[in-house]
Length: 354
Image 1 (cartoon, rainbow, N blue to C red):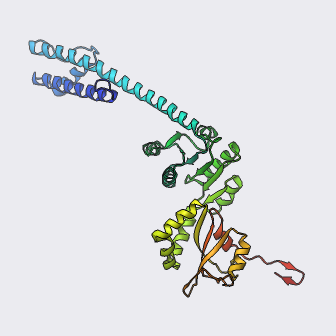
Image 2 (cartoon, rainbow, N blue to C red):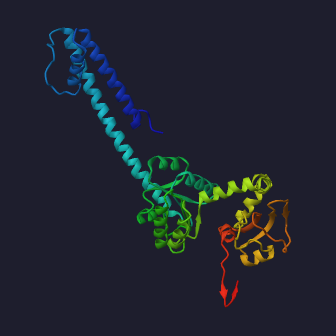
């Protein structure tokens, strides 16, 4: 630990306090000699900064001689100390930023199979924390000063810069990373980051955030492996709570089910409640037919009848009707909702319609 005398910020504070005392005492001393306050303050300022423009009023008494010499001695000494402390503070901070940045970059350069989180907003904060809790090495890319400070205080390695810039991604170790999550609240930026990341590392797994549903296709086309739509997910969750409150409480709120969800996530699986829409591609089909069409993407564990009781462990012959809630276990990232929401397409062959 540095001593008080060598600590730049404390030296700066001490010098500022000392000069404030000298300034105040000398101004009061001239004021007591009968000088107007503004003349007294002006005289002290001229003396402290050794400008030498001349006296405002004649210095013709012993009292004024003593006050002026004391102001010169203490004021000039204090200003020298304060200037040195200010220079030391600025130099120390600059060196600290340079050395600190190099230290962080050196740590990042040692990482392999880490996760890059682009954006430290609301989603980025929770994502980085969850990854850290899961002992996954994380590098945060952010350009906002306040968020950078928050990320560093949380113990994350941070690269300051624009994530849409390829050089910034290179600094984050994009060539050695196993995954990148682009979670900025700007769809265009997420698309551009996805394009850049895929160009720099063809094997990296990219998970991108999208606010507009129309952005999902663009992100996938840009090279994202998976796309997350927070607004869409939130709306589905609220609809699930309103339409099937009992099932929602059972699936989401019990400790045993939360433990099960964590276990499923570790296996790359997830549990979802999907509402069968009118004229949906899988509506009015049996459980067996639905799972056959899913081709192993998911399997049904419960059906909540729109006007009846839930059926746990439904038979393969059970038919799903419009408005029913279907509880499925699927591989993480599978578009289960999209499969159910897809419309039926009619195909004509001669005079027959399928």
